[in-house]
Length: 113
Image (cartoon, rainbow, N blue to C red):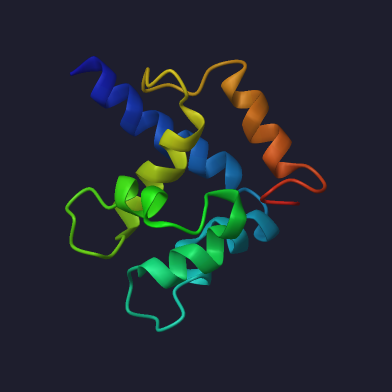
């Protein structure tokens, strides 16, 4: 139970840190990639948003689509972003994992702020 709480708390802190600036919020918010504004991401919308950074095949999308309904809701998206940095699957973004976040947020990084 502790890991689950830590993961939930960690996701909130992680996303809060990433969304602290308007530029990051625009890039991190799955709504920016939700082309048809239906509140979920389709495979095509996911591919467009992540592009070559997560691969344009079904592997990344299907990994994040926890309920296998063919769409990513906000919780699945947030979990996917968090888990993409939690390499050791500990439920916590630790050093050097947090360094990867910093790299992606820097100039030329995926989030490029």
